[in-house]
Length: 79
Image: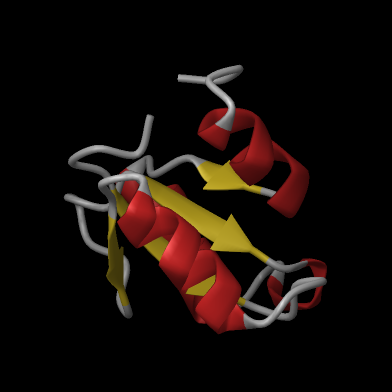
């Protein structure tokens, strides 16, 4: 469910960033460091709400997802 998707990770999550990067890549996605119009999702930790990447995502209409939503997407529950 990540195939072809570009994910940006920002903020503190319950697992290390490397765990999320590995999961994204294993499921066909790509990780980027900056939010652009081509970003599929911004995976945002609660400590970064209102931050630069969050504001950019909102301005581009990029869906901002939580850690729990990320795992739902991995399991095919959210498209």
